Length: 328
Image 1 (spheres, helix red, strand yellow):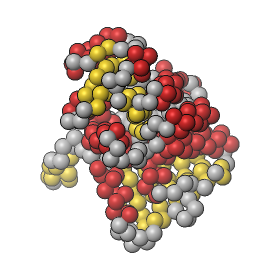
Image 2 (image 1 turned 30 degrees about the vertical axis):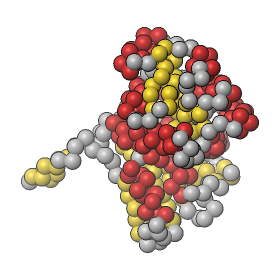
Image 3 (image 1 turned 180 degrees about the vertical axis):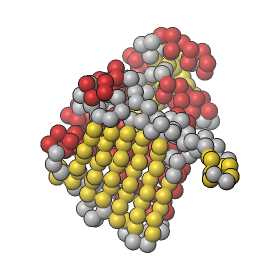
């Protein structure tokens, strides 16, 4: 049984706590959160301890740490865990500053501790099946990838101000998915964006609507469309076109019942948001991390993936500001 220290008792921390508790090989040993009421509620629910970061990192009974705390704490906690020889699961991003990410990864490498970065969409069963079918040669040589990612509603402007901006906060998942699906690194990126959803987001210096085009050495191209508002649920789709055909992964709906009548078809909306849409992905990525702790696997999504996704976000922002395609 692997004992886990969970950093962060907020919304995503609660998802991870349930997955830790539900896995036959892991136990939620302790919870660490500066908001004591949140930590106590989660600890009570799963019969876990309340610890400080220093206590958890030095605790010999803890085998792994799951970092789901505020973004600005991630890099420091990763380094502290690495120096204490804990196996590390960290929610994206490692940090919002690329140089700080690289410093952090150097520490992890020096300590020779496994680090898994939680780009959960890689573990979605639908997207994983599309990836596997591509690998089996179903559509032949890839020509284009379309990624659609739209949130149901914009976040509060207070969140926007500390998020690092749309590309680092939201599009970063799609940069990782493009790399994951196509299996190569892009060689050029071009981005355009607007503030159409909430004027307060623009006043905070950010955008809420974006199109991004990436070119890859194979000649394939990936287009990402992002919006902070959909109005009809969480819009998450992939379309992969190749020389032999097309692979698509559509939205997961709230239910699969459709009503057909004289005026057409009525069906359910897409799942409301990421907690519902990616429930299975969060479970699957935790199963993979347990395999890492048990020595049955190495991290499929490593610190390098976190670094590369942030690098692409930074270059997309450079393109947006300059109005030019950026060579990578």
